[in-house]
Length: 155
Image (cartoon, rainbow, N blue to C red; front, side, top):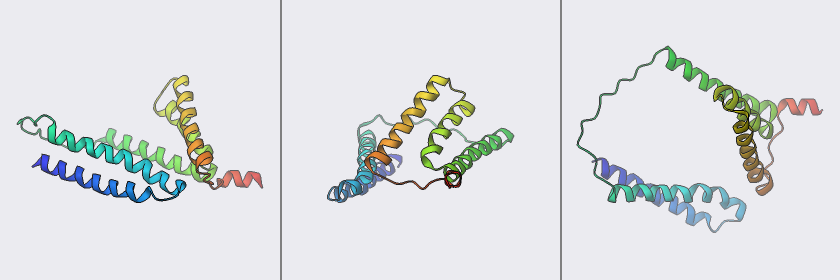
């Protein structure tokens, strides 16, 4: 039963993403970039799942383990921390704008939450900012709204 469901879902995803790829291929470059950037990897991953389902090893007959969802204080604390990081990122986007909020969030998250070394933090932040800048600003010429604080200080 699991193999049939997995194969059916993979084929359905392949059909939908394949249609999106074919439909988007006739569009102008800027319009088709996002659908192709999502559709091609999605199609490839769904095809890999379909092939794995068809030709992969059979599942073992082991009994499924009993799963018990326990919500304790630590789980609630970690959830609150994650929600706090997301709300902080949203606030930084609104107050500072995307081009400032993205690298700022990366540095703060990697240093404070991830406790990563400075070298890794700086390299990852520069890499993410570079991809962000090249894709959205240089290639797509996508104007991001100025953050509220930046607009207030600029006036």
